[in-house]
Image 1 (cartoon, helix red, strand yellow):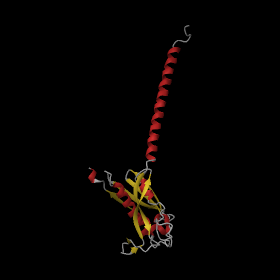
Image 2 (cartoon, rainbow, N blue to C red; image 1 turned 90 degrees about the vertical axis):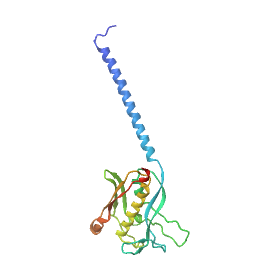
Image 3 (tube, helix red, strand yellow; image 1 turned 135 degrees about the vertical axis):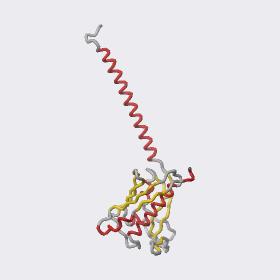
Image 4 (cartoon, rainbow, N blue to C red; image 1 turned 90 degrees about the horizontal axis):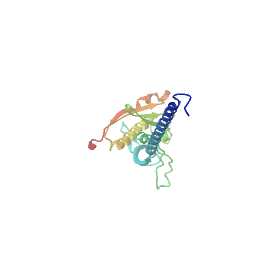
Length: 211
């Protein structure tokens, strides 16, 4: 039987081919999306054991470790502890500096429940990679120094900068590219305004031994 509409058969065949091509493209796109998603998930769930330095209060102990610029001994220190972290590095490392920390003790007289100064003083920390390097934001809008911590706000922030630098220096040991770090203070309003300059920028050099 001859079609009463010339060219209709060719048009149907062309439409069928287009459908197959379209379906093939869609399937390929779906496969690519699935592979990308799986790769992202694998990276997100990679757990790495690392050393994270934290600014710690030594209240409740008899130790004075940190020394102020005036030579004054402070009941505070910056120490590393091992942590198992996941997420983007080095951002996750910096944000882990604010982890709650109960200092283990074998003395029944030591009853301190928290020693991390960022937690004690309610200072927020956030890190993100930018074109200019690693941007670290310290949010002091809700900062308050508890009576048990015999430190000034500026001393707490300086100890925090030391912790950030030491943590990133540890991270940089196997790296082959230098890392620029910028620490900015946010929430320095009203009476906290003098602390706006407590941040700073520095560069952590690459591991030359790997070259």
